[in-house]
Image (cartoon, rainbow, N blue to C red; front, side, top):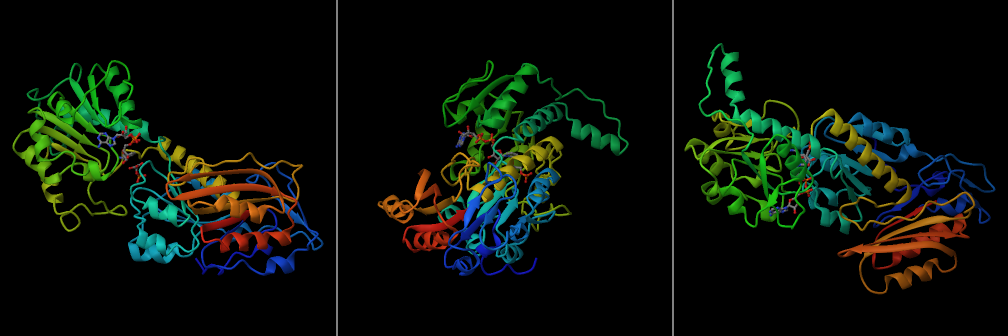
Length: 478
Ligand SMILES: NC(=O)C1=CN([C@@H]2O[C@H](COP(=O)(O)OP(=O)(O)OC[C@H]3O[C@@H](n4cnc5c(N)ncnc54)[C@H](O)[C@@H]3O)[C@@H](O)[C@H]2O)C=CC1
Ligand SMILES: O=C(O)C(=O)COP(=O)(O)O
């Protein structure tokens, strides 16, 4: 990618979109010179995100140069997502793996939108370099890889796909329960090596066994339904009181869950409270000969404690899909240089190891691509934050054909007293058609549609908003 122009020239954005004005940047003075005070704005489509829009003024119509909007997609985002972004005419660069921090920092400086999956760590250090970034799309469920708080304070919205791969994870876990109960991994490996080993000792039906689910959210509850359909009894533990699916039952403590389950499956997010949630003490509480499955996040299980419990026969087997550290791309990476415990896990044949494939199905990835890219387009084109995980969810109905001379102002700001009054003083000379504001913690998001506004007013409005001490990010869409 070539270097971005230092700022987005409003004169080039005549048909549709936005003028992201990030901290420390000036809006091009070309706005005033390129548009006449008598300019009018017309909307041939009934939505900001719809067809082409043009500024009509005394000069000729100028097409909006969407190619200036740069999007970087990492970690092999599905084609469905790329197509939606390509169709908008943005510049989209797509890479198959994540990037090491230094390379990521170089790339992130030049993009307006970043798409990632679970591997790309967006720390404060990385996000600080993202001078043009306005939004991150996590093409997955988890958002623990992003410093959400810092992103919000920098005016960078973050979106994810909250449940499009839940079913895929639940089905993988069902498969693993049967594979563990019937020792399928062992039998298959033996026969691949030529050994016929027909045994029934230590092999079980899952019917009538108890599955204990830790974390009864989207995935946990989906798993509960599937497990009951196969005749399992289900109990679950969650920090929130949740409605039971089917005949499952919530138990009050983790200890009670572990002591009463034949199979235990973890479905909690990565949080300080879930780190090493299953450690030495918890393995002691588990039933002897039970099984443990983790397809949530690697930090949830204390791996040395798991290795110990597998070696001493406390648990009969385990299945891991996630690890405390995982490589950025495919290759020959699962060894001790990356993770000190890798050889231990590889040596234990009663542990199934999969490379974080819980959500990796065609169905899930296709649906995630559509969901996250659609949210990104809406955010970029019309500032709508529905589904954002770190900013308040704000929406206004789209502008309609008869609304001319209008603009949409987005003002992301620190949530301090008196901001609304100051913003409305700035917008006060125009007709504020609709306005909404909401906050999430320290950060507030204001969206206002104003009419009777000339293109020459826009720079002035943007400048005045930028000069308020409360501002984080100002965008003017029209
Ligand atoms: N292996 C893979 O490919 C995938 C892994 N995941 C992981 O699975 C996790 C769970 O996904 P969802 O079910 O969609 O999340 P969710 O947010 O719908 O459910 C999580 C549940 O865990 C509960 N919880 C939180 N802290 C807890 C604690 N300390 N003790 C007990 N319960 C607690 C919550 O109250 C909630 O009910 C994700 O956060 C993600 O990290 C998600 C998708 C794919
Ligand atoms: O959705 C999630 O949180 C996952 O863990 C799946 O991550 P992935 O998209 O496979 O990197």
